[in-house]
Structures are given as C-alpha cells and as structure tokens.
Figure (tube, rainbow, N blue to C red):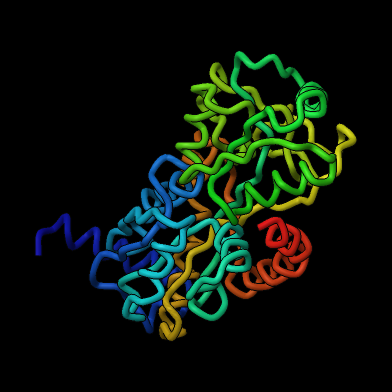
Amino acid sequence: MKRRDFVQAGFAATALAAAGPAWAEWTPRRPINVILPYSAGGGTDALARAAAASAEGILPVPMVIVNKPGSSGITGATEAAAARPDGNTMMVTSAGSFLLTSMLRDTDVDPFDSFEIIAQIGNLTPAVIVPANSPFQSVQDLVDAARANPGALRWAHNGRGGFHQVAGQSFLDRNALDTQDVPFKGGGPTRAAVIGEQVDFAFVGIQQAAGFENELRVLALAAPERDAVRSDVPTLAELGFDYVAVSSPIVFFAPKGTDPDIVEGMESALKAITETDQFAGLMRERGNVPAFLNGADTEARLRRMRDETQPVIDALKSQG
C-alpha cells in the first residue's frame, strides 16, 4: 500500500470510530450508490451532492449520487426499494414529497413499509416565487390578479403529489383562488419555467432562488417562521394569508430489511457529515443550513406530517 493511501485509510478509520460504535459492525468497502429520484439541479440534488462532497474522511468509500427521475420520485424510489439490503444502495429524497405522493396515489412503495429511515440532513421550505419582471410586487398583487381573472394565471410546482403542490394548493384553496396548475419534474425545471416566464408564479423551495436573485423575486415563505438564510422574506402568515405549512425533510433511506448495524452506521456517518464546516459552507452557498435529525426523530416527523396533511390530500383526491 502506498504511503498516501495508508494515511488516508488510517484517517478514515479514525473518523469512523469517532462517528459511533456502529462502525465497528459495518465498514463499507464499495462505493455507496445513493439513488436520488429527481433530476439534477433541484434542491434535493443540491443537498445530496453537498453531503457526498463532505463525506471524504468520514466514509472510507465514495458516496455516489445517481439521479433517477420519473413519476414524481416514485420511479427512483421503486428501484431503491428493490435493491439488495446490503448497504451498497441507498436513497436520498425529499421525504415530504415522497410521503405525500404515496398518500395521493396508489403506489407500490412508501416511506414506512418499503424502507428503513436512516436520518434527515436538511430541510426544504416552499416559497411563492415570480419572475424578476413580474408585475406582482407582493402576494396581495398576485391574489388580486387571480381574483380579477379566474383561471387565467398559471402556477408551477415540482410535480403532482409533491409537497410543493400540496403547499401551493392549500394556499389557493384557503384563499379561494382559481388558477391553472402546471407541474414540472423537479425544482430545476420549475425554476427554469419561472425564469423563462412560462408561468406566472410557482411554489418551489426558497433555496432555488440562491444565485438567481436577478432572475427571480421571492414574495413570501410558506412556513411558520422566516428562513434562516433569506430572513428578509416574510411568511404568508405575517402577510395575513391562510395556508397549510408543509415543508420537506431531506432524508436518507435504506431498503427494508437492511441490517440495523448498517442503518446505525450510516446514521452516525451522516451526523458527522452534517457537522463538518465543508457541508455547512456548501449548504449556505445553496441558500440552506444543515438540519440533522436521527432516524427515530425523522420517522416521528414524517408520521406527524402524514396526519396533519391528510385533509389536504383528501381534498386533492376529491378534485380528481
């Protein structure tokens, strides 16, 4: 073994030992393929790649992000669920969108029955975004235009059944607004549609505006509190508009039946990754901040989300 490789291997082993006792039971020896069931360029993709880039020295093997878009995230999730539960294939996804899609549609996979929940590494929060040249300077301007011209405005989101659609639809329903629903496949295409003025507004993760401040205008955040990075953006609640607060944790999953030592080992590794300066820096560049939750707390959060959003899902189903 070359001296450089020996030093790197020793450093990795030290980092693994520091991450937690589970590493004594599981040391990955092949690159970990992490299926991401959306297109490149979206908010989930950005967080996943930040984690992969920050894993050196914590994981002894590379973490490889593999984009598998399709069917609002269900195509990639189905492939991940069917993978051998040996720790070599995992999934990272917008767990809110995954959960809500599985509630809205008849799918063969869901977060609880098809996977072991490893950990949350970050969070995506939807915002109301318009093109920079939009005549709408505020949410009130947008609402007034929608009421004056029922059915005329077009709005975009990341895909049917995803948390952006649920957040946006709840806002429209609770404020009696009639608009045209235009779904796209992921955050990147949705942002591009807004920038290109193909739509009048969108509900998309506020992180999508990072680096595009001259092309997009963020009108409001659909969350109980202001964003840690874009603290200048008011919330819909502050502005006096009713809505259902639906954000999405970015979560790592393993196929159901994966050995608990592997799950615990990866949970420990992800915790260590989210605590690195590199991860925090990459997240801030992407307009976000680390937000780690262990597997048990992540599962509890998803189960609460399921219960809280069931009325919205029922309403969407009744609309056909």
